[in-house]
Amino acid sequence: MRINKFIIGTAKFGMKYGFYKKETSLKQVEKILLYAKKSGINILDTALTYNNAFDKLVKVGVKDWNIISKIPSLPKEVKDIKAWVYKITFLTLEKLKISKIDTMLIHDEENVINLKIGKKIFNSLEELKKNKLIKNIGCSIYDSYKIKKIINYYNFDLVQCPFNILDTRIYSSGLAEILHKKNIKLHLRSIFLQGLLLKSSKLPKKFKNNKILQSFDKWLANNNKNNINVCLSFVSKFNFDKLIVGVSNLKQFQEIIDRSKNLTNELPEFIIKNNNKLIDPRKW
Image 1 (cartoon, one colour):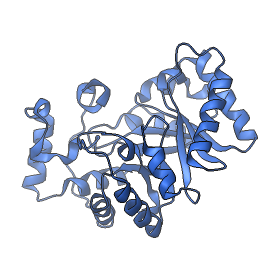
Image 2 (cartoon, one colour; image 1 turned 60 degrees about the vertical axis):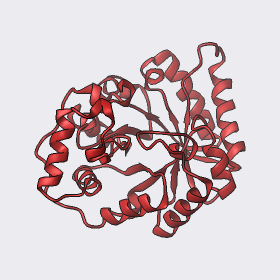
Image 3 (cartoon, one colour; image 1 turned 120 degrees about the vertical axis):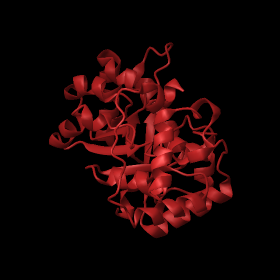
Image 4 (cartoon, one colour; image 1 turned 180 degrees about the vertical axis):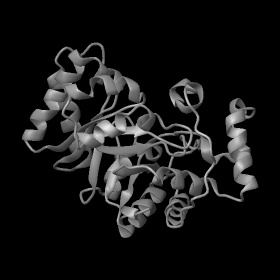
C-alpha cells in the first residue's frame, strides 16, 4: 500500500479514544508528525470536538499540513445555521493558526439526512469554499444505506466512513460505487474498529465471549498472521482514496507503516453482516 494513502487521525491526540484509553502526549505527537512528514504523509484529520488536540497540533505547527476538520452536530438552540457554520470555520482557522482548511466535513450524519438542516450547512460551506477558506466539502458517516438515499441532494467532494474486515457496508450498500461514478473521493476510517481488532486475546470484558472476535483471533493464531497486517491487507483489496489511522505513539505508527509494505493475500473467508452491536461503536 502506498504511504501517501495514509491520513493521521488526531482524536487520540486530544482525548481517550477507542480501547487504548490513553491520550497521546505532546512529545509523541511531535514524533508522529515528524515521522509521517518524512514518510510522505501530509494530511491530518481533526476536529474542534477532539478536546485539546488542537492545542497540541498548534504547538507542533501544522501550517505545512493539509487539514481535514469537521462541523459538529448542530445544537438545538442554534437558529442561524449560516452564522454558526461560519463561527466554527473561523474558530478552526484561528485555533490552528492556518489560513485555509483543505476539507470541512459535516460530522453528524443525522444532520446530513435531515435535508432541511443539511442543505443549510452545505450551502454555508459552499460560500466559504467560494471565498477559498475551504477547498473541499464532505460528510462523515456511519450508515451507508441512509446516505445512499440522499447523496444526490448534495454535491460533496468527499465522504468519510468506517470500513474494516467486519464492516463492509460502504461496499455492500452500493454507496461506494455511486461515489466512484460521481467522482466523490472516499476516505476510510476505523480499519481496526477503534482498536478492537488489535486486542486479540486481551479483549475487553464485554467482548470476551464474542464468537466473531474469537473466530478472528483463532484464525490469526492458526495461520500465524499479524492482526495489523491482515486488517491493512483486507482494506487494500478495495478501491478508495485515503485511509485514516489513529495512533497513540510513534512505535505503533511505525508498525502500521511497516506492515503496510508487505501485505498478504491470505485472508479469513468471512464477512460479518448486520451485526451493528459489534461494528458500530455508538452501540458499545
